[in-house]
Length: 489
Image 1 (cartoon, rainbow, N blue to C red):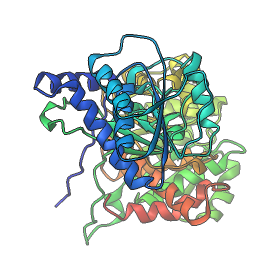
Image 2: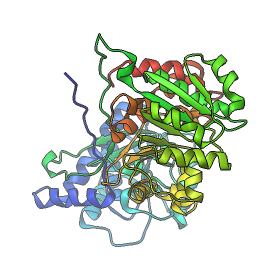
Image 3: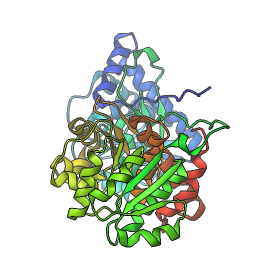
Image 4: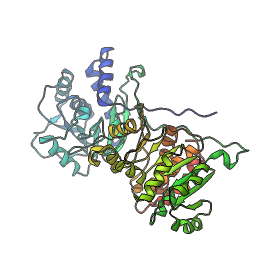
């Protein structure tokens, strides 16, 4: 029996506000939600930093600041030395005013806003939470820069201040949190882009809000279907034939990496269609690969007929030879995984894609396909991935820190595994081969993309554990690709 994979929903800031409004309408006062958030943070501090005697809270003008005030009161009542500095401005809510008064009555010390940050064992970032989608400015920006220069740990309440909770972008200064304790529900921006570098450890407290108040959402953490055991009477014909098309002159390694990754992920047969000059070397290096020198698109026809899935782009180049091979692949009527120069050629001369393709761009390639800049893509990775999926009709894997998998129906899933050691040449070629192999084994495009991304990230993490992130190369993943492809995940 195939096991069920649990789904962890992700929300935009406005959806979270709607959940809070629903809880308040159901009879939970806003100040009670603040108290619950503060209590969760205080319990965390006692577990994580029991030795912290001096705690300094940076409180903003919104409800995130109210959470900070309540936390300051709880910490002070326990006998800790607690101080608060607050950003003035705006009309604080009634709940926030109650929390502020509670902190004063508890004996919390107020620090002048313009004074340097006091020495503390722990700093609490309660400046903005989900309430800011622009760059912090003024005093708040100065505090953030000062906070990031200190050695003491930082606890961010809900979202590190300066991080956009919807996009994961940081338009200006951002708190570098040791731990981020999020409230109510997971915010989608915590898991991709710059968020990966500033959230630290991520924890969630639902504030006792009933599950039936959580609306449905199309965005979730990656939850692909698991691999299953093979039948005992299986043969290679059951697991498809992947044809990797690429390997222009000087770029045979990319095609080889994709081909071996397809083998290690379980494809029954794998062929390479490469520039003829590379055939002998590729065959000698990995004899299990069937390597064919391809002079032009007409020489590809016989190979296309034998293949069940095409992986196009690794080392393809942007020569007339390359464009001819891409055009032949697009009209072959076979499932496609398109990467690297296949995407760059599409950006130069757009073509209609056959249904059920998988595209695997990095942000620069996505920007070229969308006609924008890499900075535009990174400013809102969710919108970029979904926009490209809707524009092309393909399943889109937007690679990077917190890789996204999107489809035109609006569904997006976010990968939380992977590490900076994977920022090296050839990693995308390995992923392309893996997704193609999963397609060859019968997975639909959406499922193959999600599962391929997950297995690839897990293999990268295991390779980093074995030898460290720095200096890791794409072929280091291959033994672990095989290992994870033989597990149910």
